[in-house]
Length: 394
Ligand SMILES: Cc1ncc(COP(=O)(O)O)c(C=O)c1O
Image (cartoon, rainbow, N blue to C red; front, side, top):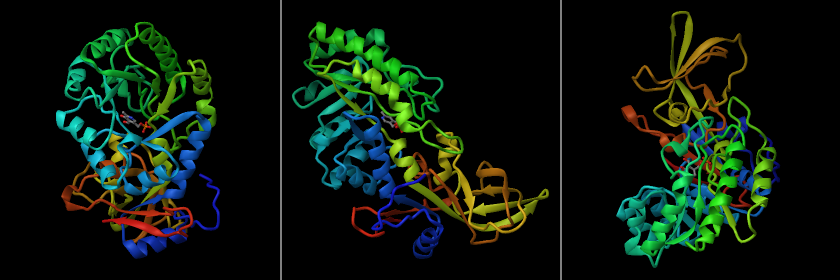
C-alpha cells in the first residue's frame, strides 16, 4: 500500500527498518505504523464524509492506535470492561466512546457508566432491563440484525433483533424509561460488497421513521457498524468505490439523523506487519519445513479465527525457489502457517514478514506452550516524531 510520507516519518515496513527493529527488540514483532493508522482513518473519513468514526478497539486494542485516532479527532467503540479500562487508563473522556456489546453483565455497564460512557447497545428485552438502574445515565442504540452469509464473519447471526421486532423493543425501552438514541447494525466483517450496508440503511430509514411516528424516543442516530474490507492475499474493492452506494443510501436519510460507524479492520489491518524468524528447519518428505517463532497460536491466530490469508514474504530472495512449509513454534501439528509456499532455502534467523496483520491477529494470540506473544512496537506515533519508537510491549 502506498502511503504519502513526509520526510519526518520513517517507513517501518521497509526492510532496512524492519531489520533495525528486530536487531533492537528481537523477534517475533508486531510493528504498528501510526502513520498508516492516520492514513486509513483519513481515507475512510473521505469515503464517508459526515460519518463520525468510532474506532472499534477489538481488532487491535493498543494505546498507540487509540491515541492516534484521538489525535485525528476520532471516537472509540468499546465492547468489554477491559477495553473500557484501557482507555480510562489513558485518560480518555468516556463521552468520546460508545459501548456496543449487545450482551453485558451489570458490572460491565456499571464500570463503563463510571468512566463516563453514555451510549450502549441492546438487542432484546432482557438486556434493556439491565439498564433500569441507570436510566438517567444511559441511552441505547437498538441493534438490528441483517444476515450476511457472504461476509467473512456474519455478525448478525449472533446479535441483533429482527427488523420486525424493532418497534416492540423500542416500546419496551420507552416503558422502562430508557432513552432510545438510535439504531445500529453490523453486517459482518470484511464485507464482500456494500450491498448489505445499503439494504440495512434502507431498512433502518423506515424503522427510524416508524419510531419517530410513535414518539418512542429521540432516535436521531444511526450506527452503520464496521465491515469495511481490506486487501489480504485477495484484493478488496477500493474504499471510495466500496462506499459510494453507502453514501447514496445515507443521503436519503432525514437531515436530523447523525450517522456513526464502528470500523476496526479497515483502520488496524493494513497498519501493522508481523515479523517472525526461522528457529530451525527440517527436510521432511522432500520439502523444507521452516519453524518460525510465531504461528497459529500467536499473531497468525487470525488465520483460524478470522479466516485471513496474510501476504507472506521472505527476506532471503536469492536461490532456487521450491515448495516449502512455514510452521509455528508450538508442539501442535495444527500450527502450520503455509504449505507449498515457493521459497529459496532459508536458514535459522532468516526473517519472514506477514503484511496486513494489524486486525484480529495479535489481539487473539495466546501464549500456548509458553511461547510469548509478539512484542509490539509502534512507530511514528505523534506527527513530528521522526520515526520514534514510542511504545514497546513485551
Ligand atoms: C460490535 C462491533 N463493532 C465493530 C466491529 C469491527 O468490525 P470491523 O473490524 O469489520 O470493522 C465488530 C467486529 O467484530 C463488532 O462486533
